[in-house]
Length: 172
Image (cartoon, rainbow, N blue to C red; front, side):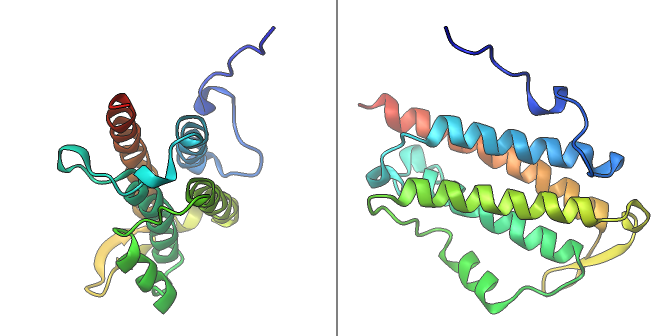
């Protein structure tokens, strides 16, 4: 007999140590991690760069999910992007397709979610309205703006990834 399915992460209650105002961000990131683990685990590495109908590839989404979390959470800390972050950004459109690439990309996203949750735990709620500059142009945002954007951007790309993977796998 199989175990009953768990409700979505946001319905499982508050996450220990995550400030109350940041619970929705943490819930969204953990839900995205669960969905990636479930739906991409058996995706073939050789198809990571396929772009059906001109859509972004599954490999791009997997790389971008990791990179965008890293970048937005860096801006939320009021830190500039590093050279390695800029190099990662430049390489997001060229996903690896070697055997083992899928679990590597999934693990990188899982690790980035762990780092994001740790940062959420360490973020005092009093800093949420603080101004933060984004990018070289230092476009205006706030700590809460960046963290919420990271969550919504992540969920958007997970949805796109799931649709693209289904299109690719339906051809088999």
